[in-house]
Image (cartoon, rainbow, N blue to C red; front, side, top):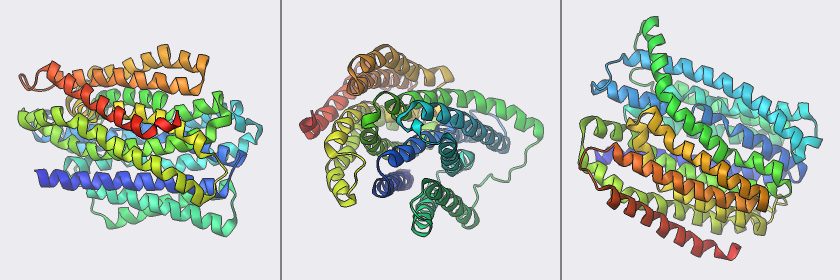
Length: 457
């Protein structure tokens, strides 16, 4: 079992690495080719397009959880119907993402520093970027089947092909047709879908891809998928507000430093993606451990998971912290200065560390929690954000806003930890012991990050 988990974690880490390299490469190309208003326009469109995956966020987890439960007789359902219903839900979510983000993009563009530009051109740019991202939602049901089979390498290779195709397409378009924003976006979109077409042809299909199911079963499972997905959807809305929603907010309230914040936010999201990718390999095993009441691995995860996740996050952020200076000099970028970027990266890092420490418990919630249990922590985080972080931002600026988000993340992580422990088998671990280990892990990681970044304050 350990060998299989290590292999799947390795596949997910590869996915995280590819995503990180993709984000860095996109930002690197943008900072080298554009600056000023052009870079701000690209960054704003890319920030909005990056929200697309949230519409289907964890739909693969819904499929994985329900398929594993079905195979262990926890949920007596038709596996083929679950998958077909999930594909239909993915199409509906993609349509919702495209429509709502086009409308939101128009509103944000008109009220941001980029609003002086052409609205039609910006919306065309945004629509192309949205199409380049929409595959992530459409393929979630297929990924869920692979994860249920604990065959994580196929999704990892698919993701890699799409990302490489997108970068190659964007670079080729700029090299051939010049540095226009629209040309670059079209190249990105065509390259991404070409990479996906190659993997769809060459890689094996999931085991139950062709399972027959009557239409009535498909309709029933659509509703059941939607019930489980609702808990994840609330998490997605929370992430939209708290994490992915920050760049557009900065574009509105602190447009003079938006470029610096965007670069820092990109680096921060890399840390989140890398750790989240590795931990997501636990979803299928955790679903199985909860279904079979296997206490030993659950106990090890509760005690050791927080410190491993938190210190791994510090390590990834530290690499970004020390690498950003040489990278900016190598790119000769004029988008933002190192002194403007580093304070944002330092503050975002504290928020990421306190939230990342709870990743193990978050995966446990994803594997077995009810909709209400999954939603509780993010609702608390949103409340603290609006009651504390938002007023701080209005009164004292963007740095105070980020400090408020650190507090919101800490409170939310405690809720995740508490609910995760309540779902464990009886007698697994004393609540006080687990919470002490959890907070100690956060404290150690935040202290380490402070020692690294204190020169920025």
